[in-house]
Amino acid sequence: MPKPKTAAPEKRLTDVELELMTILWSLGGGSVADIIAQLPTARPLAYTSVSTIVRILESKGFVAARRQGRGHIYSPLITRSEYEARAVKDVVNRVFQGVPVAMVRQLFETVRMTDEDVRELRTLVERIENQK
Image 1 (spheres, rainbow, N blue to C red):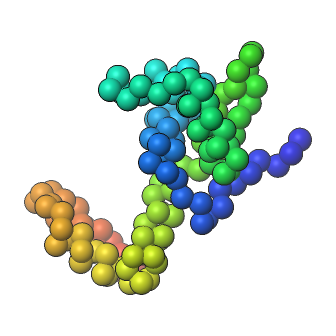
Image 2 (image 1 turned 45 degrees about the horizontal axis):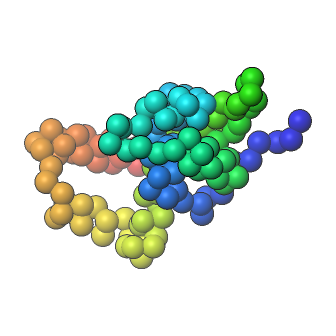
């Protein structure tokens, strides 16, 4: 049996690929019909379009396919958390010249945060400081 592909670290998802991966993460896997059923009604995508995009995700190593009846069931090979970590590292490196503090500073200056968000961030910083 061939070894499953793993997503190359440099591979990034397009907007529509991320949309379909988000559905697969929430389902834990599914068929093209399952994915289409989860799309918002305002987002009509043809069966063939979804099928093509999922096969692209498979070729990029983000999903695995197994035959079931006349179709396939697609399962994520990478967790949402793993992809988020890759995406953040990519943004830090490409946009913020490898300086994470620059990204965090921009986040604080650009995005309105609730008091709860700030408390959660303080707790996170304290936890990181205690791990040193």
